Image 1 (cartoon, helix red, strand yellow):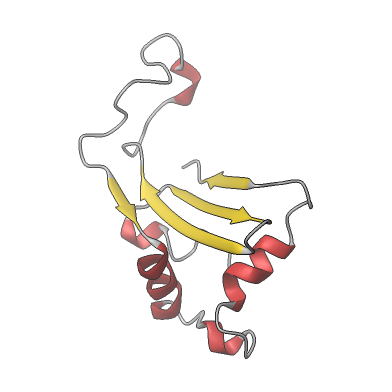
Image 2: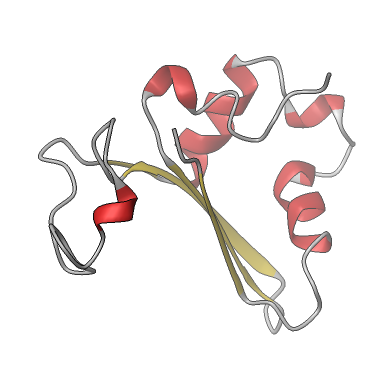
Length: 109
């Protein structure tokens, strides 16, 4: 079984992965974050918490370089995928529908 995009995120306690692509400039950014505490019961949304609630007191946000390093440390180096400068993000962006400008994935534990 292959690795999930979330495989490198779990050991760091990260819950979200974000890829933002601008088709006009052909630029992209990567982001990873810990946006909620472990054990958060999302079935209680709009009862115990809402969209503006703080979901963890220990939020962490990684920038593009830090996310690339996280994947490289897990053995998913960009050079293994292609000779292009940033193929990992490019391949992820290419997999999105043409009209998609923002993609966020969240791991639910």
